Image 1 (cartoon, rainbow, N blue to C red):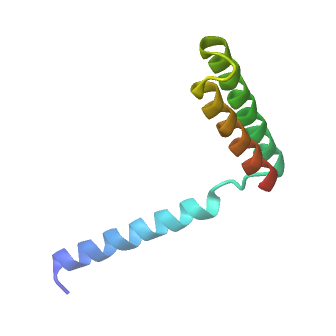
Image 2: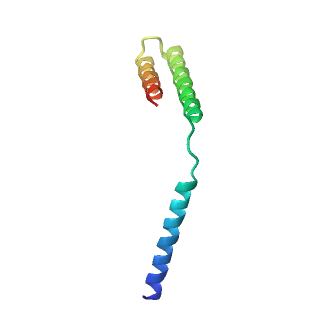
Image 3: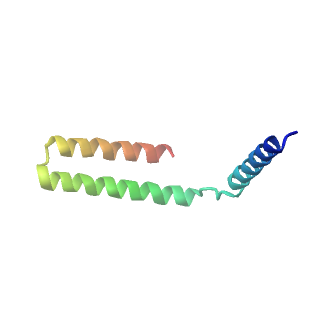
Length: 80
């Protein structure tokens, strides 16, 4: 085996072990974390809707878009 191919093989093995080690030590997301993130997304979407209504009016296209976004966020969080 040549010197260059040995270095490439060692670099590959080091990279693979670092990748696998990183995956194994990644912290799992708890249900409380998911709930907190969903609540945060919902609050942000509600805030964006309120801003759109204040700036553009209740029936404006911007407010309608923000309503759809809020509904999508709520639906995703219900399924999570």
